[in-house]
Length: 359
Figure 1 (tube, helix red, strand yellow):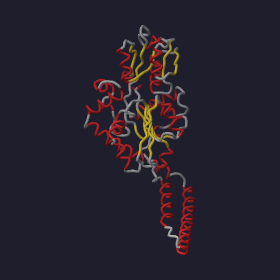
Figure 2 (cartoon, one colour):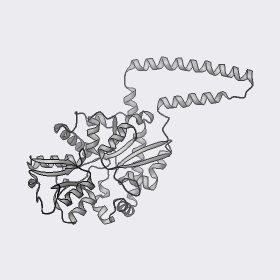
Figure 3 (cartoon, helix red, strand yellow):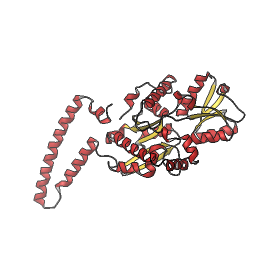
Figure 4 (spheres, rainbow, N blue to C red):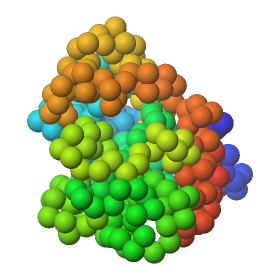
């Protein structure tokens, strides 16, 4: 698979030729200006250093070749917590400073992390340029790319995200009972894809989906304004413990599991073409450290999810975290999700997953 740099370099011979002639002309012009500056400095005796102009030229050249890496990396994730970090190897790496230390070796001196309530909101920030890189669910990432978002997929750190479908108290007792009912979902999220796929498999054709963020959907479920809602992780298990009906979850439907997607804007990759390799090496280093401190990791998850280490271990076991950027299992899941979204017209166009992936 080609790197971003190789993809860009393979485009068109004519552009290269023009660029070569331009660079030759620019080089001759720069040489003449330097000579002129030297003569001027010698005559006036003002002490100005020709090296200053040379430094600017080198800096400009570095920028053109993509070596002028921005000092600040803007990273987005799904969620909100007092530590302002995601879970998984990435979150552990940020929490322990492992990823920051690795990025510093390449000129990145600061990482700004921003949490988002859902994937669609995060992709908007990626598209607008407020973010350079984001970790989110596969469904919103695919929908954004199919809609023309200039992003590239650089890793899929998990391929076992379980969505839950939870009914109101004294309400529907099975998925088939949702015929003619109202279901709260986060539009464009992986749970949206899970619910639509589930209802299709169960033969439920008459239903109403309403878009609500999880806190609003939970409140609506408690009031009885909706018949069911989607949720995930610890919040889903808490609702079940409180007596809400566990109608279904994606663990029973391997083809409806969600996966994570780490995507980078093409604009950032133009500045730092080797970023995917650097990022994945940093992530793998964080994962190796995490595996040496399992109990501490579950305590960390408990803190950011406001739960217990035992429940954190049940919901997010370390075994779910992938050792490599991409796996055959994960790519197959992405392909199935993409095909479903295209068929349901939730994704605007079809594309090859391998064309989106960048290693």
